[in-house]
Length: 329
Ligand SMILES: NC(=O)c1ccc[n+]([C@@H]2O[C@H](COP(=O)([O-])OP(=O)(O)OC[C@H]3O[C@@H](n4cnc5c(N)ncnc54)[C@H](O)[C@@H]3O)[C@@H](O)[C@H]2O)c1
Image (cartoon, rainbow, N blue to C red; front, side, top):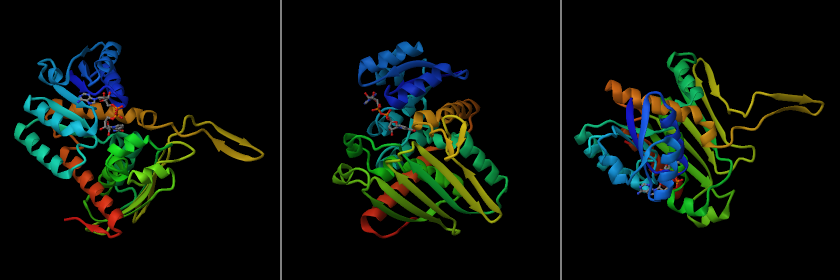
């Protein structure tokens, strides 16, 4: 039974705390938040203790720290936690600067503590099954990966201004999924983006509609399409095309009920947003982390995966700004 402390009791921290409190392999010991009342509310709901972040990290009853505070706190908290001898599960992205991530990973290596990055989509049962069948050779050698990722509605402008831009904030998940399926590093990044949804996003220097193409050294191609708007709900689909066929995972709907009338067929809406769509993935990600820490296996996705996804996001941001493809070593 791995004993956890959670840093950050916001949208995602609350959900992780509830999952930890319900997990049979984990125990939630303490919760911290910059707003003490937020930590107290989550602690009360989960039978844990509200402490400051420093107290959680120093708490001898805490074996592992789950970092769910804002992105600009992650690297410092990772370093503090591993130096205190704790295993760390950290929300994406590790940091908005690849250099800062690389520096942080050196501290993690020196401390010798496990670090896993919460790229939850790898644990989505449908995407994990796609990967299993790809690895089993069901469609032969992989040639192209197509990822569609659309949010139901744009976030607030204050969020956009601190997010690091669509490629680093939103598409970071898709870069990780792309690497997960491609099985080799992209070496070339093409990116275009537009402001089609919310003019204020453009005024903040970002885009709300974006496409990226990646090429690996062996020539495999990946196409990622992201939008901050989808009027029909959270749209999350992946298609893998190989020499021997195609594998596809579609959206998860609110129910499997299908209505047919004289005007045609209709289906239920997609699950609303990430908390609902990836419920199983968030739970399975914690199971994978606990299993890795308890068995001494290196956790996956690793800090290195966090760094590589960030490098792709940086390259895509540059490619969009310059209109030129970016080559990666
Ligand atoms: N994996 C995913 O699907 C996913 C989804 C959403 C957010 N995230 C990531 O999770 C992180 C948090 O996002 P969120 O949407 O929950 O944000 P949020 O703003 O809802 O919550 C963040 C919480 O952290 C608290 N906080 C701020 N500074 C702190 C500090 N120094 N110590 C402790 N607590 C502090 C805030 O008071 C707030 O309650 C971000 O890095 C984000 O990128 C990941």
